[in-house]
Image 1 (cartoon, rainbow, N blue to C red):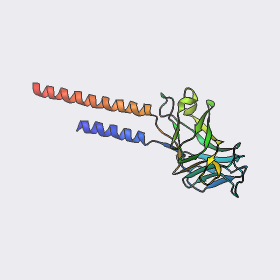
Image 2 (image 1 turned 30 degrees about the horizontal axis):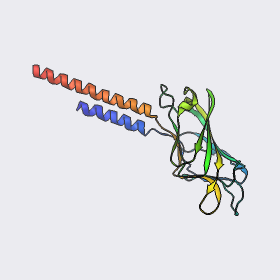
Image 3 (image 1 turned 45 degrees about the vertical axis):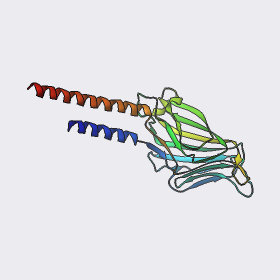
Image 4 (image 1 turned 120 degrees about the horizontal axis):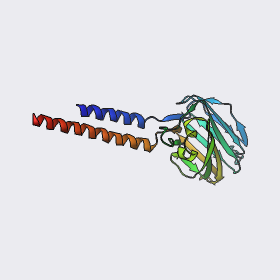
Amino acid sequence: MRCFVYSTAIALMLCSTASASLVIDDFSGTAVHVNGFSGSNGPTALDDGVAGTRRISASGLSSSLFGSISGVDVGGNGFSVTALSLGGSATIEYSFTSPIDLHSSGAFPGSPLVLDLFDTVLGTFDLSVTYDGTAGSASTLLSISGTGPVGIPGTVFGNGALASAVDKITLVFTPTSLADDGSGTLAAQITGSGSSISAVPEPTSLALLGASMFGGFGIVARRRKKKIVEETKA
């Protein structure tokens, strides 16, 4: 019975930790479109795991080609950045009402920021990610050329102090090469449905919990063995 209680408690702890993603943006709500060579929208309130706003802007991102003008679309669990020319960029800026902690624990360098946006990637993009917080500002640059979630560990932001109190996250998408979209049009594009930006517990903390689980089972086993020995002597 005691073993069952220990194992149940530990299992619940592991499950709650594994599912404790901090959703920063799931792109729900009204779609926002920023098109043409430049443009921006006013701040849109986040209705996800944190309080704050999202602001989108584009500069020189696209050009008119075959009667179409591309841009940035977000909303309704969808995300899209499309450029028909090089030399521009799209910026998504998150400002938080209260600083958010992207650490799973103060003892670790920080949970990864996970961008689950890349269902389709055409051409290539550079992605600049900047954290601003009470400890300062730092950036990292990634090259996006394939599909699938992209994780940005807190380790790239120094000792992790910055990632523990983030006031603002800025994402800048810059197309670096175009590709044929299958219809003869050259473009660079990122699209995603069911998209989200979130922070999840890093594997280190989950491994630590796993170690504590085995340790708990070891304690239970020793106590049970001791009890059997005492009963045999009696």
